[in-house]
Image: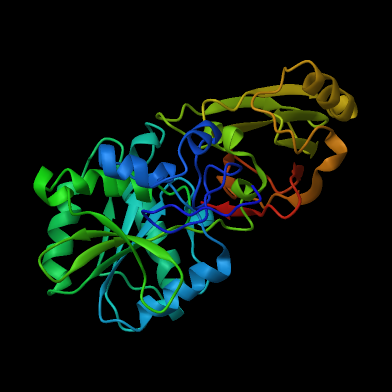
Length: 371
């Protein structure tokens, strides 16, 4: 668009390319009305009381956190309990200062049935402590089903002490769905006063939800983790790798020389070791295909062309476009390979001889966790 038009609700420049970015509007809507026009997010908020995900540039997000840290407030830090590592905000402890923090562990509804929730919460708590984040409460919730939302609201009211509340978190952790659940706490009259306003001292927009006459809950835009696979995928593919229902793990008995194609997005190549059990804990919409490692490149390229890889991305049309990561699996009764933003692969037993090659989009991080 040569002419820059702005949403009269939030002031963002209107654009038709990126549904996750500020100012998105459908092209036909933009062409039909150029007066008093709302972006898609503001339209949904005004007419349906619903908020949708919006992301911002990393530098803008850090600017926002810096402004929040200088205010006496309560911070609600939302984390995706399944994609915990991809949900962490880098150097977040420096942006907290002395403000109290409630950590919300969202999406418990998608965890596999066998998950030990208490153990998972303890692990995340330890990881936060290592990063100098000492929450006053860790609350597991489902913003989709509403589970534990009442407990979260009670905790917010008990600890805010007439201060503003800021909800922060990475993109895709379910912040907007959480806000939509919180809106249900209010009557229609109160919800009517939910507004979009410029955050003091910045050019950024936040959503204001009134708690009383002088204080608000602020919903802030999220930011993409550059080490996550989320950063590399178009929106239509991203929707498929973010689990919507309870995950059903899939187990394969692999011999060395076998490869699992993970949709059209990644691959695990079992390079060396005895026959072993690999359990893939991913979105149910990510299909897995077993092929011979010696044929993996040709198999990927052929299956891509024939639409046999689901989901597949237009950004990775050939196997050679992936980056190789060589992993030596330590000896342990339970080892987990965590791929940021995609999920994890569990090896039920390792004698220390296993070697695995991962093929991932360039820049995506993968780590090994024991126990």
